[in-house]
Image 1 (tube, helix red, strand yellow):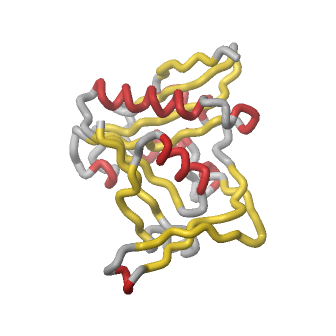
Image 2 (tube, rainbow, N blue to C red):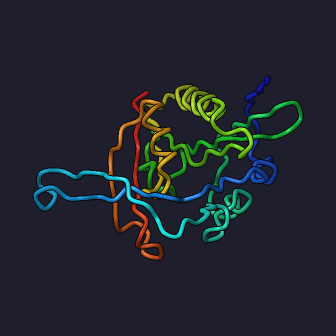
Amino acid sequence: MAVRIIEETVSKLYDYGTVSPGFLVEARFAIDPIEDGLGGLKLRIEPVEPPYVKDYDLDNDESPDLWLKRWDISHWGVISAFVGAMRIGGAIVAWNTPEIHMLEGRKDLAALWDIRVHTDYRRNGIGSGLFSRSVDWARERDCIQLKVETQNVNIPACQFYARQGCRLAAINPFAYPEQPEEVQFIWQLDL
């Protein structure tokens, strides 16, 4: 299978959004404080009953075509994966966007805002290719670090980021008051 990974303009966000980021949640990371947190935290996998499908595009109107209305994304990177003419995935890298809290108002940070691969093509190295190109994109803008946000209910994503060399830098159990069972994980990769 010949996969082509290219950079596109933000005008392609609607097309980008045609690939669903949805996944089945069957388990989550539970966070156990050691010595009331002073001894650190221990993550353990626990089942979720009943399992459910999580699709970020359907949560709180977070679909890619709405990002244009929420932020100035003129400095963002759109990286897309194709097999022939079929769009099978993509990654969005946010950079130089003061209103994005995760970027801390700095121009030497980038955030992997989104990454998705069509369900029929997952576990074939496409995500790794998109991640690698996102890292290159951030380096081309003299960034020294790439940050990524995910949640404790997305175990495959957490394992993926760890395999890419990211380290878990922050855990925020209070980030999503509307979804108290979800915990924010921030990953970082030094570039």
